Length: 519
Image (cartoon, rainbow, N blue to C red; front, side, top):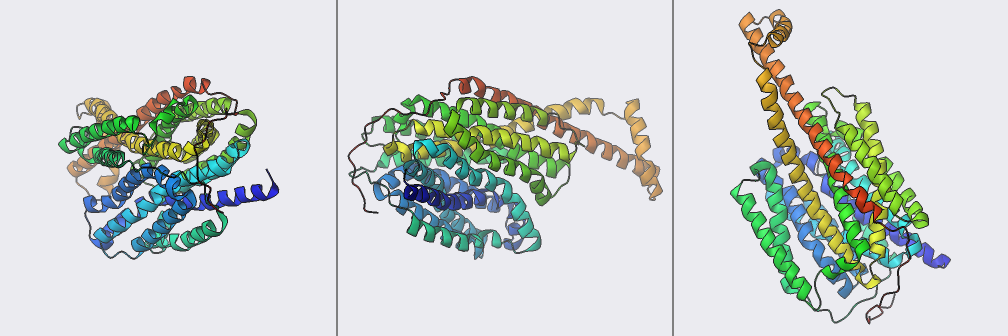
């Protein structure tokens, strides 16, 4: 590789990292600002939830189209288009005047955001030679892993000290810079002409993913037994099954499911599903524990979780470099082992566990995630022929989007069911006829009486205070159970990791006739 080509490779990677960071950041930065938006627009919880749901659903629908669009029009054009639409949507969000206008702006933003990640990853695999892909994907992964951790902290600071609209308008100068760099630095990829648009596949996957993602987003509020949830999930199964049948029988499918015949790629997807599930457990449960049980603000929680993102970010290029030299097998197994041990450590949380303990466990967990995620994904993508990398990237991104939504829905269900179980168990021992309970209540009545409450009122206050502590204990025990289940699920990745091959060499594969585009 010449010095000129290597310089172009790293500059291109920088351009792609800018877009990736913006897209993923906006998936997490909005959450903290939702209460402020509700107040500004006098919106209900259900109305404001569409600010998140609209973005997520749009991304899910757009991602499967990226492979076809990139192959047909060129990945540079699609990347610039995606970044432009994302920046324009961010501007509309920043200047929105009502809940409805904000939701529409988020949908526009989601169109660009959904394209950026799979298009950017496909470009990396087309630009970077096999021998350097681990390092390149490790650098790209810094943005992918740091953005979700930075989001809540940055959003908390902006909402508390500045103007909430800045969480969107800050994207405008960064987006303009990203588009400018992409226009002047990136070279257009090779086009694959005469591709027929798979309309049947596009419609079935769009309806299927919309039903799946929207149905799963309703689980936390309505429960799995809700007629709406059941109806949406049945629709998802029907349309996604139809989509699979269409794709397997189409001469030029929207998402070429036949690439699953490349075993290393399929294996990497399975391991990524397990890792993503475990990762989302930490992202979802730790803030819940910190804010609902410990009373910390979103910003304080973000500061506790931020070092783990730094640890992951540092490990990404290191693991990429190690992958380039030694392959993925032992990196994958080592990373999964660290995730298992650290997730088990989180299953030992109590109501008063030191925040330093949690921070250090999360840092160790972040190291494990950084150690295994990129090598696993890179080894799988390396097995795919160059002309199919766009389709493979779109399929991988679609699966991760679905797994993320499923993970949160399933984890929240586990927490809720275990909490109900422990509440019943603890309530059986919480009785005013229990001498130990009454002794504790008696010890708690002193303060209320000293503040002027009657003995009866003080006794009632003490009972409620003690009951609240019991319910807190039930909640933390439910979270502990969930972390233990996640650790067990992650163990399934170890035997899969044993099947990963260390070798990086790819056998030559036929490339279809293409039309070269002038750079």
